[in-house]
Length: 204
Image (tube, rainbow, N blue to C red; front, side):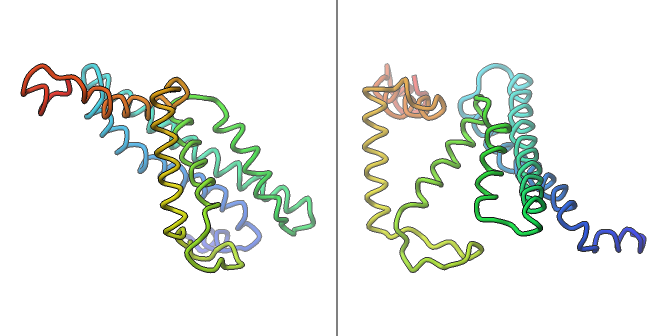
């Protein structure tokens, strides 16, 4: 690497702009790492059709997850930078919320299977963050995460499972399709068998 390029990369004046590029790259890589094995396993366990069809589905899901995360990180960091510049170079507490709000709407606002899974994953983490912690909360954001208090976590687990099982039986149409299909496999298909083979080996 030439000294001129190295000097450019190390120049603090360009740091925020280069961080947008690096963030997009990291979002793309992380999306591939997360989605590809998930899509592969789901295709093996529940996929239909021949393997060329399944591979196309795996590729599409992986590409969408990776590109969506890359877009979101780049847009989020860009909006943070614009807000900081508009405020005289000083970040504000609300900047992250505003950037996340706009990025979430434009990147993940269109409903499809991948976006729905990502949004539900994020939403579950947001809800779980309100469970009381097992130790004192640190004042600064970059601190290590503190696990939930065991008693409150047990209560959250009980309420979550009680709610989803009731919804499955009485309002199944409101449950996310991937979870609904998994619950059908576990709780309804397990009521049906014709012989020892369909009891222990094949689901039906």
